[in-house]
View 1 (cartoon, one colour):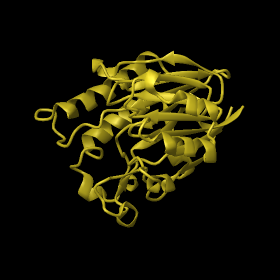
View 2 (view 1 turned 90 degrees about the horizontal axis):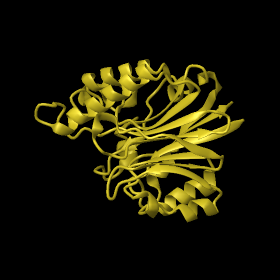
View 3 (view 1 turned 180 degrees about the vertical axis):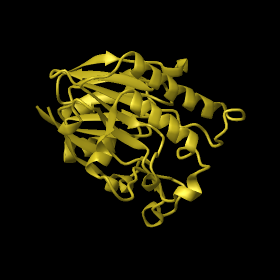
View 4 (view 1 turned 45 degrees about the vertical axis):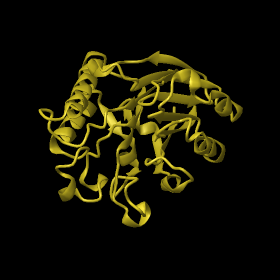
Length: 262
């Protein structure tokens, strides 16, 4: 089975329902993983997505913040929903396709503004969340799995607009990058995006604060597509839909795509 998957931090699925529908109608990924839905599950505009062929959904939601959902044209059943670091947040959902592939959708905490857990509780929560993810992958090694989502870390020097200027900025600090690597290694996850696009600057997020985000181009690659080693060679055709950052009432993230032949 061949399918295309996309992951997108939508920053309110109800507010941005029109551009979600635009993506589904014009680009037609078989599976779309959304983060920061900011909606209870029963308020997600499921009928609009179903009308476009996305008749399967697994989701977790909170009113006003967090929230993850997987929309699928392909039959899918819920496989897992974890509360990492016991935060009580809706930040993880997993669905299983009929071919046995499990798709994990994550929204890792952003971590606030100060990269010091002693003075910033949110930064500590982010590190604890990644630690809990790492430990879970050690306890239950994933197989035949894909992990996507807004992981809120840009790990490589070419995943940010300025490595030197962002070393002390949350999302690119050495402690986060190290924790990110440990989490990835624990599940033997392969970065599919960088497997396909190994070199060069690559971003999936541009701040709302920039008056002209495209011209300034001060981006970061915070959104990721991973696969376990047993299926990583099946991944291909990765790309980031940069244009979506310029759509009407956009999210500050752009969708990241990958295809799999399994």
